[in-house]
Length: 218
Image 1 (cartoon, one colour):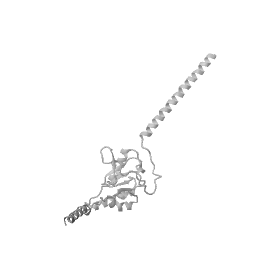
Image 2 (cartoon, rainbow, N blue to C red):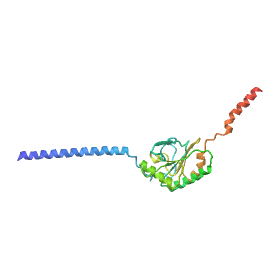
Image 3 (cartoon, rainbow, N blue to C red):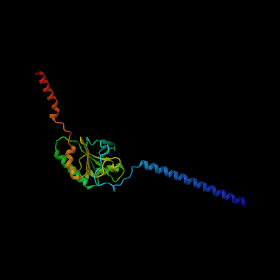
Image 4 (tube, one colour):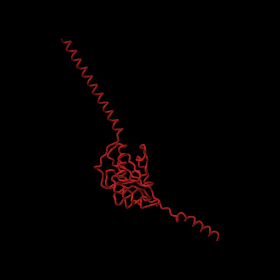
C-alpha cells in the first residue's frame, strides 16, 4: 500500500513538471511572436497631442521620404523642398481640400511663367497600411479634382510638420513652414519663384571687363 502511494506521488510530480514545462515554452513562443510583430508593424500614432501652430525647422527638408501615389508599385522617393516645395495635407481635413483648390487656381493664373513645381504630401493618415493610404489619396484626388502631383509621407507624421495644411519651402533665407491657410495661398507665388538670375547680373562682369580693357588701350 505504501509503495502504491509513492508511485502516485511520483506520477503527480511528473505531470506537474510536464505542465510547467509546456507553460514556459508557450510563454516563450508568445514573447517571440509579439516581438516580431512589433518590429514588422508600423507604429501607431495619435493626433490628439498635435500643437496648434507650426514646427521648428529641425528636420531634413531636403530629404523628405514619400511614396509616389501615381506609381504602379509603391516606391520610396525623396523630396527636396528647396527644388520642389511641398504642401503637407490631410485627406480628412476640409481646410486642406479648400487650400489645395485655391492653390491650383493661383498656379493656373501664372500661365506660362516659369516656376518651381509643387507636390502634395498626404500626412496624418488614419491608417498605417501604405496601400490603403495610397487608395485614400487617389479617392481624395478624384473627389476634389486635384491636378497636382500626389504623394504619401513615410514615417512619423510629426517628423516634418505638426499641422495640416502646412506649406514647406526653402530659399536663400532658410526653411519656411507656413500653417495658416490664407497665408499659404498668399505665399504660394513666393514659394514657387525661381532663383533670381537677371540678365543684368549675367552681363555685369563682362561689361566691367570690357571697360577695363578699353582703359588699358587708352
